[in-house]
Length: 123
Image (cartoon, rainbow, N blue to C red; front, side, top):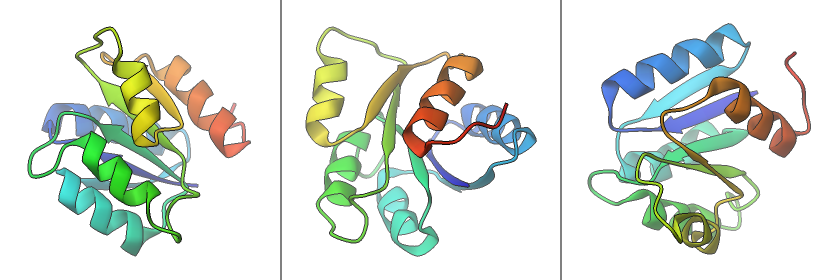
C-alpha cells in the first residue's frame, strides 16, 4: 500500500516515513500543498496523510482540489494538524478529508485509522 505524506516539516516527514516504512508501507513525500496535489495524480497513492498548515496552498485547499478530481476523489485523506482547535475536525471533513488526527502523532492510533480506511491490517 502506498502512502503519500504531504508535510512541510522535515522532522515530521522523516519520523513518520521511517515508521510507516517499517510497517511495510511504500511511502512518497510532498513538501507543500501544490506538490501534494501533483503527486496524488502522478503517484496514485492508496491513502494521503495531509498536513493542514502547508506552504503554497494549505492542506484544506489541497484536499478540496484532490477530492474535486474524478480520478482522485476515491483516495482517502487523513488530515493531520498540530493546531487542534474547536471546529478543525468539522472543517477538515467539510474540505473532503475522510478522517482527522492530531500532532504529535501517536502511531498506533494513526495506523488504526489508516488500516480502517484501507480495509487492511499490518499487525
